[in-house]
Each structure stands twice: as C-alpha cells, then as structure tokens.
Length: 159
Ligand code: PNS
Image 1 (tube, rainbow, N blue to C red):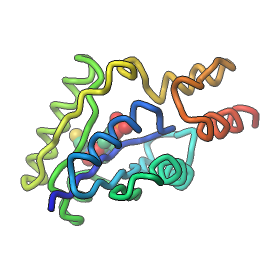
Image 2 (image 1 turned 30 degrees about the horizontal axis):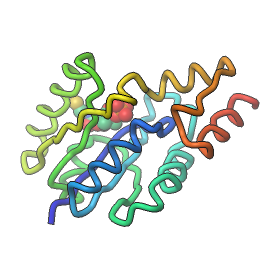
Image 3 (image 1 turned 120 degrees about the vertical axis):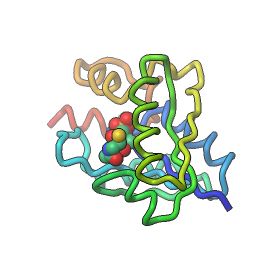
Image 4 (image 1 turned 60 degrees about the horizontal axis):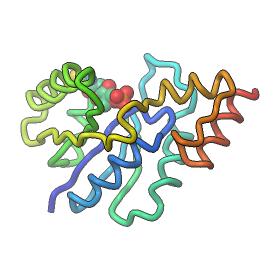
C-alpha cells in the first residue's frame, strides 16, 4: 500500500499541477496533495483558499486527499508515514533545485523516496507565477487554469 505525497505552494493550482496529480494518483494507492503554509512568502491565496481550490479540482479522483502543513516536508512525511514524495519536473532548469531538495529530504526522511514525473509537454512552460503575472495584466489565462480557478484569480486582482 504505497502512500504518496505531492507537496507544493499551489498558489494557484494550474493545469500543470492537475496533470501531475492525475498521473501520480494512477501510480500510487493514495495521494495526498499538501499545501505548504510558508510564513516567509506572501501568497496571492491563503492556505485555506488553496486547499479549497485543490479540493474542487481533485473532487473526481477518489484516492486523492488535500491537506496543508507547516515546517519541513520531511517531518510531515515521517509523521504521516508517506512512502513517496512526488514532484513535477518541467525542464532542466527545475532539475538542480529539485535534486537538492530530493537529496535533502532523503537524508531527513530516509524511508521516503522522491519520484519525479516529467510534466506533459503541453504544460512544460507553465508556472503559478506566470499565471499570476498574465492575470495581473488582464491577459487570457483560460489555457492555464480551470474556469473556476480563473474566476478566483481575477476576483483577487479586482480588489
Ligand atoms: O510548489 P513549490 O513552491 O515548488 O513547492 C516547494 C516545496 C513546498 C515542496 C518546498 O519549498 C518545501 O518542501 N518546503 C518546506 C520546507 C522544507 O522542507 N525545506 C527543505 C527542503 S530542501
């Protein structure tokens, strides 16, 4: 019974994340998508908002749960008995940071391995940061996020 964790900021969730979630959920018995509560960053969406958004887009995938956590990913992995940490790799530019993070997590939580899923090519360019920038300037983000997320992003920028 392999339990996988997909940790991230998800500020906001994009089609790239959803692609990774769907593919990882097909590979493992259960998948928890967990939003990091990171006091050092100023996110567009609160942790609760991001959890709600993820719950909405994952509602049709039976083995996916959504949670949030604070502190080290490795501690959350150990205290919840995850076997695998999932991360998406878009391009070679992601690799150095992801490799360092995977190796650090393996030292801190030796029972868990990181499994990288290469993002589907159609989403290889996509990031939450790009989505926010395009939305900020009033651009079309309909190819980047589902309709309900699009509405929530534009609501934020209207305020
Ligand atoms: O979606 P992101 O921002 O690429 O996700 C990064 C995340 C949340 C997975 C990473 O920053 C993380 O695990 N932070 C928790 C703190 C931690 O464990 N740091 C040590 C890893 S090197």
